[in-house]
Length: 221
Ligand SMILES: CCCCCCCC/C=C\CCCCCCCC(=O)OC[C@H](COP(=O)(O)O[C@@H]1[C@H](O)[C@H](OP(=O)(O)O)[C@@H](O)[C@H](O)[C@H]1O)OC(=O)CCCCCCC/C=C\CCCCCCCC
Ligand SMILES: Nc1ccn([C@@H]2O[C@H](COP(=O)(O)O)[C@@H](O)[C@H]2O)c(=O)n1
Ligand SMILES: [Mg+2]
Ligand SMILES: [Mg+2]
Image (cartoon, rainbow, N blue to C red):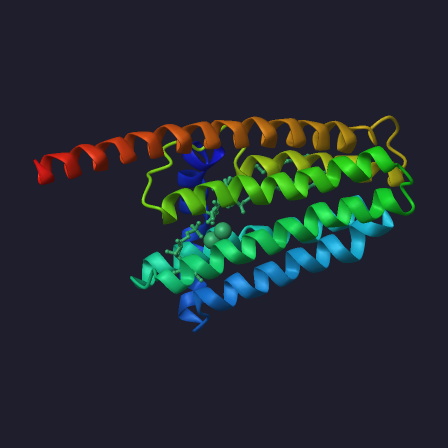
């Protein structure tokens, strides 16, 4: 949903910045790599210590690089297969660091095994959700569904909640429960999305196999 409705807005907002980086001689791949490194640093330095506010600030500063790199590639007329591969692969790394950071907190100072398990579930299910689309497309299917909770939703729900929950350390009361609620929402939403995508791939592959079989029997008769 965000990918559909918010992308156009962010493209307009970020285009001048992407053009500025191009003029400075920065390449899209550099932005992809530095953006991922920044997200990883924010997630793995701050989240395992329960510093959710500062961790989210750092991650937010870098996560938009994922919209800038593609924007730069398109402005340069240099969108490439390598760029698409690098972008998607490093998305998985960044997501692993974010949900891994939550899991490390709950396994340590946060001392909550259930939420540690929910964080690990968010990490794993998010990776599998993305894999379903990548694998479906690699076997020639359209995978014509994005589902309830895409990557942008997973990130926005988790980061907004983590940033706000982090304000508890600055004395804002009754706000720390936002992160556990967000993690449960992302976990359930990812499961629903996974089911939506698997059902779609199952239907599309049956249709494609039937069409191929009909074509083969037509060719042999
Ligand atoms: C007192 C204040 C405290 C709180 C402060 C901090 C608040 C911080 C809040 C939010 C920041 C959230 C930012 C999240 C931005 C996410 C941007 C992003 O990276 O989107 C990426 C996404 C996907 O791009 P790709 O095509 O490159 O990726 C593909 C995708 O990953 C596929 O995954 P799948 O869906 O299949 O799982 C892969 O399959 C594919 O391989 C991969 O290539 O880009 C978009 O979706 C575009 C839309 C971005 C929309 C961003 C919306 C941000 C909205 C609001 C943020 C502001 C909120 C303000 C909150 C204030 C709180 C008090
Ligand atoms: N280093 C890069 C990064 C991305 N691309 C191209 O952009 C597409 C992704 O666009 P986003 O707006 O989601 O970042 C990707 O599929 C590539 O075509 C690139 O070429 N090099
Ligand atoms: Mg990108
Ligand atoms: Mg990306």
